[in-house]
Image (cartoon, rainbow, N blue to C red; front, side):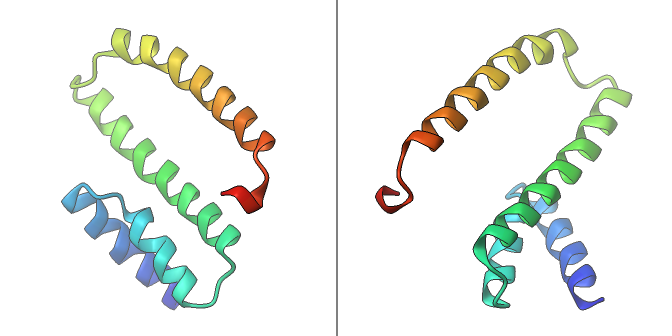
Length: 95
């Protein structure tokens, strides 16, 4: 229950200042002796939840340029695939 409350507070503050709550949230999890791989995964879930809710409200208010968003999405997917491929080629010790 404490983790849920801390998560809500951190995500609210992160969204309020534009920093992204996951950058704070991951550090709190690591300080709480959570393994870093679980902290990063939880941070990614928090990022997806925050950005999805923001995107929904922006589209609803007609703030978003959907044509540009679809165009940029193509390069985002290509970049993610290239980044994931490069990540599998680098040994963890080198990072």
